[in-house]
Structure formats: C-alpha cells, structure tokens
Amino acid sequence: MVKLAHFLKVVLEAQPESKETEEELLALKLIVLFVLKRNATKLWTRLKLDTTWKQTLVGLKRSVHALGLTFVELHPKLDAWYFTKEEGCGDEFQPNPLFMQACMDKARLDRVDSPHDAVVVYTYLRMLAHCNPFLYEPVLRARSEKLEALCKTNPEIWGYYLTHVILYNVRFTRLRTQVHTPNGSTMRAFRELNTLCEKHMKGLSLDLRGEITLCCKLCPMVPFPALKVLRASLQPVPATIDLHERAVLTLAFCPFDDD
Image (cartoon, rainbow, N blue to C red; front, top):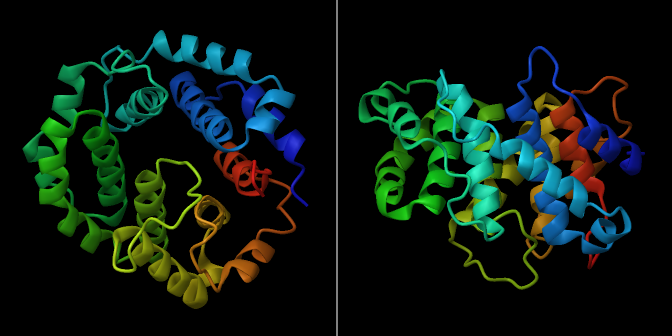
C-alpha cells in the first residue's frame, strides 16, 4: 500500500538535488499543497499545512521574477503564477515578461516538431491562457491542433497530454456535479485515456498511471472502465521512485473530503 503520510513527508521536506533546481522543487511542493488545499481540507487542517504553504510561497517569491536561461526554466515559474493566481494572489508571482516572450515567441513555437516538446508547449499555453487570456488564448487556439497531433504519435506523451487537458479543465479541483457535455474536451480525454489504458497499460509509466488515477479521482462521476485495473497496477509501489512519482501517488491515494 502507498504509505501516504511518509510519501507526503518526503515530498514536503525534500531538498534540491543536483538534477533539480530549488525552484522546480518548490513548484512541485506548491502543486501538491494546492491540490490538498482544494480537495482534502480535513487532511490539510490535521497536518497544519498552512505554515508549509506560506514557506513555499516565500521561497518561490525569491526566484520567480528572475530571468531564466532556458525554455525548461519557464515551467516552475508558470506553475507558481498559475497556482497562486488560482488562490487569489493575482499577478504577484508573474514571471519576467521578457523571459516569457523570449520562450514563447512565434519562431520558437513554429520549430516544435516532437511529441515531448509539444506536450510541454501545450502545458505552458494552458497556464498562460489562464493567467493572461487576452494575450495567450488566441495562441492556444491557433496551436492546439498541431500540438495534439504531435502528442498523439507517442502513447506515453499522448497520455500526458490528455491528463493535462483534464487537470487544467477542472483546475486541479474535484468536480462534485457533472458539468461536462459528452462531446466536451474533458469527456473526450477520459474516453481516450481509457482506450490508452486498455491497449497499453503495461507500457505506461508509473508516473502517468498515477496522473490518470488522479484525474479519475477529481472527476468521480465520469465513467472509466479501466480504473480498477489501473489502480491495481500502482500496487505494490516500487522500492525506488522519484520525487514526482511520489508526489503524484500521494495525491492519487490521499483521502479527499467527500471520499
């Protein structure tokens, strides 16, 4: 079984390693805390996570406005902006506009030609379109078809694309009523994910299977025939897993308020 308390402790107390910047680690903690704050308030109160949340924001504030050097460095900065904006902080954590423009300029987007780059750009654009819809919603609409087609050429990347469609549609918050139409993007993503699980379950990474489980947890009224087999595939947890996998499994198995 997933040792929830231990997993959460490891994630929240983790220190940066050589392959992970402090900002990336803080952004991961922010996402975990955001999901718990929105969906597991009893657990949040019992573990007194308010202090950890405030400390994480202080850490991010020290770095989020700095200019980055690479496209990858934009990711934790956008995570910080998106999730804090969802929590009512406005644009307090907005990354440096010049850095964002340099990363998302038309020439760079035109060069995207791999499934991996496509899913990263899609994720960036979902966050940017939420935080600055006037500037980035048109870009998202114009690029979505090509990005989706590229992602679909690789089953693993296709799975991540679909989970991100769902997660950003529901804003990482559990839906308590059925609000999506059968032909909407959320329902379509679930149908595609179920097909993916039925065809490729053994070939999907632990991390992706955890993300799919989290999507099902956030949308409990959406039919997902492969869920029982999917959840079973996550047990037993391998002895060695990375921090992102540990974070995803923590959220996939933690008790939400109305479970």
